[in-house]
Length: 504
Ligand SMILES: CC(=O)N[C@H]1[C@@H](OP(=O)(O)OP(=O)(O)OC[C@H]2O[C@@H](n3ccc(=O)[nH]c3=O)[C@H](O)[C@@H]2O)O[C@H](CO)[C@@H](O)[C@@H]1O[C@H](C)C(=O)N[C@@H](C)C(=O)N[C@H](CCC(=O)O)C(=O)O
Ligand SMILES: Nc1ncnc2c1ncn2[C@@H]1O[C@H](COP(=O)(O)OP(=O)(O)OP(=O)(O)O)[C@@H](O)[C@H]1O
Ligand SMILES: N[C@H](CCC[C@H](N)C(=O)O)C(=O)O
Ligand SMILES: [Mg+2]
Image (cartoon, rainbow, N blue to C red):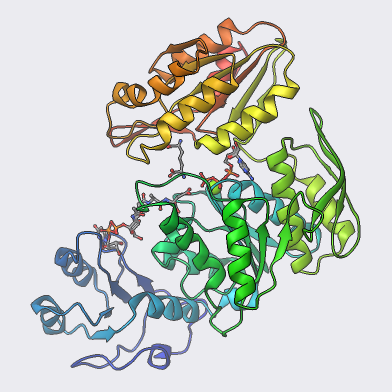
């Protein structure tokens, strides 16, 4: 068993857990796991319910792997646990497993989030973009800062492709622990509604929490918009482990944001409000949005702030204002906020322009909700001299209700549409297109239906004339396409370059 970089003291576990049932605490704990597939000898293993209850084979596998202590929920009692004890693995029963996991994992890594500046962003759209911008500002202000979100988990010298927007609770605490050990003192992270619903951020301490917006998505997982909102709201109502509350930054132009603000005010909290209205704490004073980006002056409680960002679109102005709010909450001086915003030249797969010597603009973007598509196409239109040709589809095994909505937006806001596949996953690609097509057809905009995404991109680029824009939406930074359960290499940017005749 490797020596733990933080927990050199033996039996630290005694101070954070109640006594095990019918057994003693082990002498030492090497690691934490909640998945039999990654459990190691010497680990403390958390036995958890899945959506289908408890799978006892997982416990058996974990014991075979040599875990030294099992912690589980008081509601989980069975002969299998007696069996664990029979194998001389002590079992601890707790009333609130997620809360215990958060406390144990944080303590195991030396409570890094309590020592770092952690900024968390949630909302349907704009999390990744805002988290990159926030990190940039924090770095400019001298706080070495990592990033956890949809595109990467970046903890200093270790940058790995993200597996989820918000990783599982133990991975999250580990990432923060390792980030601290590598000298990072800040973390800019995305928190998805799934993560909030599943308690993945339990035990973490946040300095600032940011709400971008709430529009339709993920209603395959959440029963309705109200439950989706309640999941997001947890980030703002939860307390840090020391009982404090983070500072909240909320988009006051969004209808759910307005509600969140009024609920926070009722709880005697004072959120920093961003928005177009001059009543907002942070609002635009004199801002222009064009092909070369966003520039101008933003009003803030600390005075006027000059911004110059290569990013474009009104929605990115909203993201920038949210980030200004977070930065002011961190007490970062205005000139450094301004520098940090300018230094972020773009975000992978978000409004990524594929340059070529053809006089057409090709834009790859991650818009995969109807609101994002509307925002994106609304940003492209004023910049485009010719026609807007949109290539898009919808993910399989995900919210089906957004399919017609996306079809309608794509049709209404484009001059030509290539209806194609996104990640079909285990669904029949043609059936997904069937669910998008009627709404698209209803707009009267010409379209072609080509399920093969590569062919659709090639076709869109081949029909584009000088001055036209080809918008390839939905997959952004993704370098794969999921067909069935298999991930195949696929990158919209590579395919677009190939179609444009650019050497790869
Ligand atoms: C729908 C959903 O979010 N499911 C999550 C949930 O799965 P589950 O309840 O089915 O759990 P399970 O797989 O039965 O496992 C139960 C327990 O047994 C363990 N296990 C499981 C298998 C095994 O062989 N051995 C074993 O010990 C698991 O580690 C876990 O402790 O709990 C698991 C453990 O934390 C998550 O990995 C899993 O995320 C799946 C992979 C997923 O795809 N989630 C997506 C939808 C997601 O989280 N998306 C958001 C993005 C949203 C956005 O961008 O807005 C994200 O944050 O990435
Ligand atoms: N503030 C915003 N409001 C509306 N749409 C936005 C906003 N910011 C970005 N978008 C659009 O949404 C897409 C996704 O943006 P981004 O990746 O920043 O969001 P996200 O919340 O991280 O999404 P995901 O949950 O899928 O990771 C962008 O490519 C853009 O089209
Ligand atoms: N985080 C989003 C990603 C969707 C991206 C899109 N390409 C798709 O596969 O549907 C989700 O889990 O819904
Ligand atoms: Mg994201």
